[in-house]
Image (tube, rainbow over all chains, first blue to last red; front, side, top):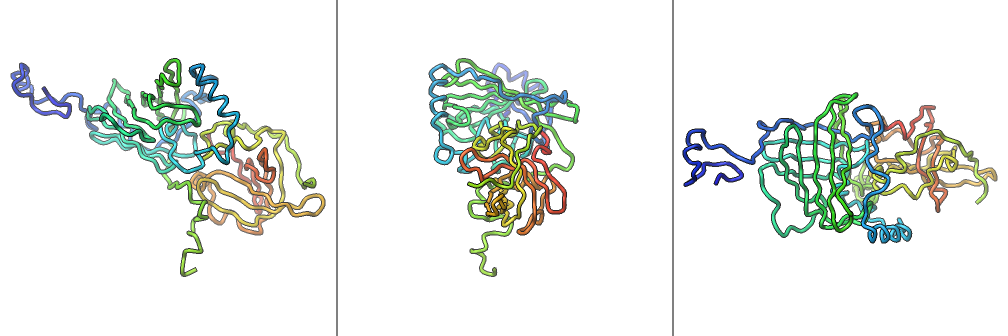
Length: 247
Length: 131
């Protein structure tokens, strides 16, 4: 059986066919085979391809009733100074990392067997494996999860599992599975990525639901450096004067 | 606290960025983003920290009684502001500035910047960042 990474089948009833046709890799995407190349620097935007405001979040998410109740209680008693873990400069993680607003760009680097996404906000990195692998068993959940991708026509479809659970900004459990669909489209302002993210989390939600957001390009846009805890040490641009012996 | 030399401005700025909790490193929901709560502060920069995740401007405002009230003005990250023309020399202690901002619900001298007029008369609006 041909491995997911390619190679000649052995002792297979397909041997003759493979001999004639050559060794054909299956379930392996490569940059050369990819129907679309997303490589570039993209800025998330709340303006859709038609120039109109795109509301990413619906008014109400389909929480399970018991989760809805407990979430409301949690938020009613929430104290930013004590309870807001987002102040700790930890990553946003998935899916929030892909649902940010138009201040922090994302760089997509598409190579033969991997698509790497660099996110300026918190200097974070996602890796999407395109070689047909399945996520390893027993992974410790991570902020970005484990992502595997494939091509469906002109769209990149990515499945992400093994994501850390959160309470903020929206509850998500370890059972969360995300499926993203990246599609290159043409908007009023030029090329755009339409990103649909389907959430399936039976511990939190009564049904799967899909959010849609967009990314666009700007001429001259570059990625910057973002270490969110700089101001804790008043590092600013010049370093902490008290630790610079020549100051 | 005595009345400050501040005016409440009815702003027509779209405040969607204040609602979206993904807009900041941490939530900005501690600031009163209602237009009626917007304050206008005229004062002098005493310190500013051009940094990630938030740029902070300390300014002294003289209230109606002649008392100096110290405000902390928060705005977005250095990396984002740089893309909109801010540089390390954009502000310096001693600069006289005008700020329109949303006050913290519990700490009214901590405010979230909506608009600033620099000492050279130029201005920058938070909603100038494209959505």
